[in-house]
Length: 425
Image 1 (tube, helix red, strand yellow):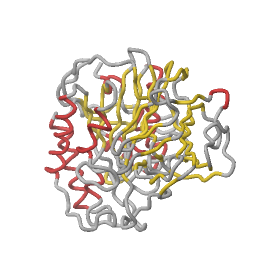
Image 2: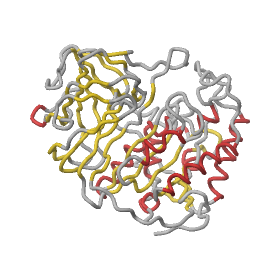
Image 3: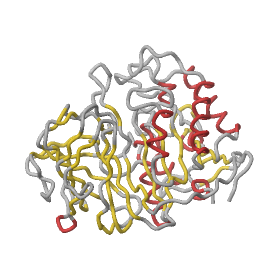
Image 4: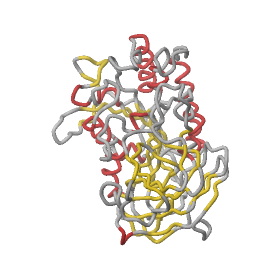
């Protein structure tokens, strides 16, 4: 189904099991022709970030390096398939990355794996691989029948001193570090728990030829800050659960702290769009929800010396993302920026919100709703705001920091994204 014109005057009402709400939906644009795609599809992803030094206000929460240790990471697939392969990334490394062994299995509890499902991964037939600075590497395919929404345990052995230069920041998922090559161990003995990802970037499946991929491209709201830890309750997780039965993979390319125009906790959106969106096999649609950090960071502890960004600058950035997506025949859906009055008040990060900053957000949202630049627009602002106080998140959807939704808010976001808007059908 193709959508044309401005349709936001009619709200789409979708019911949460316990929380009623209405989401305003804007749709505006033309159909994009389907493109031929490989049967390999990304079923899980974590966008790589470079480490930062201690001068930044947030710690990385990972060790500076590992040596003779195994990292086990737990991930949840969105769609299933007959075979799997993984991608490791040395995107921000300045020296070769030496991998001694990688194994994949179904995940058990507390960092354990299901031993009967354990499989070794190889790289050009070898258990070990060296990844050049700045490069990724894909494993060879391995037979591994995988059901949609399965949890996987992926164990990577780092045999030599290895700076952790490429990682994914955040406390939504725990990883586990064991001593020695314990990739075959169902459960590590003494182990260290860390928050975030190390070198592991994606899992691909040999899916049905009719499978499609939707990519969520954004910041900490897409990365799931404020959701329950280790529970897969980010909005892309909830969307994956909705769409798995329809053969639609949902890829989370969110980075906490990401900005449309600025760097720090990852490269700016324009710089990483090619690697985090277009490099996936055959993406159908990208949902863009980014910009609130460009607005909120200047003058705060995150970016005390940065000047205030203007609506025109942000709009120019969105137009560039739209142009990139269209050049590659990828449908691009914009999401309005949710309210953030009171964001991080009373914390060491005070200064994120001001009325002047909020006027920038309002101007950007007004452009999204009326310009017809995106293929469709989902009005997350209208969905999450408090009708009695539109500058704030609805208390039922607020994680408590007045910036990030909680589980209910993320569930509501996923529920408010109609299938036909995401796929263009």
